[in-house]
Image (cartoon, rainbow, N blue to C red; front, side):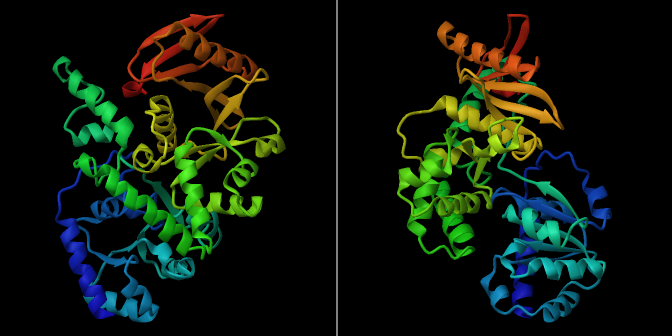
Amino acid sequence: MRTVILNQKKERDELTARPYLTRRNSQDTEILLRNHLIKLITGPRRVGKSTQALLMLRNKNFAYLNFDSQQLLDNWDANLVMRTLDDVYPGYEYLLLDEVQNLPDWDLWVSELYRMGKNMVITGSNAKMLSSEMVTVLTGKYFQVEMLPFSLEEFFDWNKLELHGLREENKTDASVLIDDYLRNGGYPEVVASRQLTRSYLDILFDSIVWKDVAKRHNVRNITDLNDLALYLVSNFCNPLSANELTEELGFSSVNTTKKYLDYLHEPYLFYYLPRYNNKLQLMKKAPRKVYVVDNGFVEAKAFSLSDNLGRLLENQVFVELIRRGYNTDKTIFYYRSRNDKEVDFVLRNGTHITRLVQVCYDLGSPKTEKREVDALLECAGELNCDNLLIVTNAEQRTIEKNGYRIDVVPISMF
């Protein structure tokens, strides 16, 4: 065990010595660290959770355990581990537990450490950490920081351009970057090596499905699970129901399909957006729209050969809304009017609908503009909301119609 922890200390020291892009974050790191609540950093694999934790703790006296190590898990002895940490990191103030969800009954052990007064930073790649373990054993003991792939603004930071303060001579470069981000996404590992995007994300997608889902849940029919994942990434932004998926893919039961859908959400791979309805039962029965955590997975895995720029932009807007704290259980939905016209996103605060957001890559065609605007206005009337927005790839203007004002903004200003 001492050898394992010493090797991880070398890994820690090497990682903290590297230069990193500082992610945009509204949280004050020093205030977070002074608070003895557990700092839980969650999000998909390979988005920089470990890096964020290391940056929080750089220049601090902290101990480090990486639970992506099979050697650590195979030789696990909690008492021995704590004694060894005291020896290897004398007088440490903070404890970083990386990918801790890989440890069986991790929540009980972390709860015990919390009672002992350990100041912990934890990373995890599984949404279930919040829906079950954290909510039960560790209720009231943690503060969550959720991380996602680079935002468009962070992607511009990486490329040393200011998204919201572009000079005229940089606008062509900016347009190229926006298109690049739309198609290839923002995974940190590939923003500097775009030629690796497809192969890297292809492998990462498979790793999430096989390791974070199939292995964690002991899925026996891995072929069905993989077929569902590929179907979802190929049909992103479309409304889907478990019944339809079961029939389309020839699965054994609707319950199996529902179970697999939940499994694929846990590692933050897919999100499911409910259709807004004042009646909860009707909302639960309606098809949900599926979104993928990063557009790059579409390029890497989808079997569609068309560009789908409109859906890519819609997916990008959805992920940005999640990044801003909107929640598919309470505060963000899609909506269809009584005449079956659709608005992409309904944003809600409590019981009050605060904004309707429509996404359209290009409003240049009068026919397209009429379709999108009419749908937005009909939904606005039914939902009694006059804060209306259309997000496009590059257009900025205002549309006034039927007493409503609609702001049209490019994705760079969203």
